[in-house]
Image 1 (tube, one colour):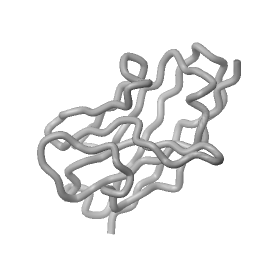
Image 2: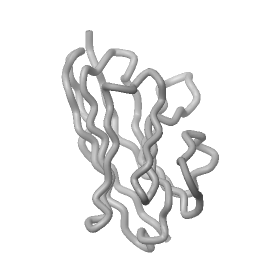
Image 3: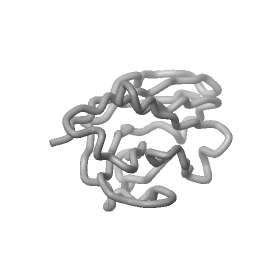
Image 4: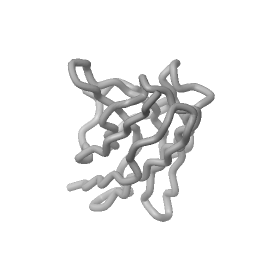
Length: 125
């Protein structure tokens, strides 16, 4: 069983930065894709960024150039550096993982099997 625990959320003004982290444990070496997803009230969960075990990255169009996903395989840690934050980035952010895959990792939430509990990001204008 894989456990994912997020940290690093908080409140920030527009234009500011936050860094989210996700610690993976329990068969974490078997994971191929890891990603960050977000959901705000009344909206569907959407993929923000994903990374494969060999370092290929995928981004939601609206965050390209502002967010950077990275991983430390030795420490089983996933990170999301968020810069130039906007009020529309406000959401609950979730770390997720998929044990299978190949090539580029999808941003479709339904393809991910393991989820963290989420961390809130609030951006004020």
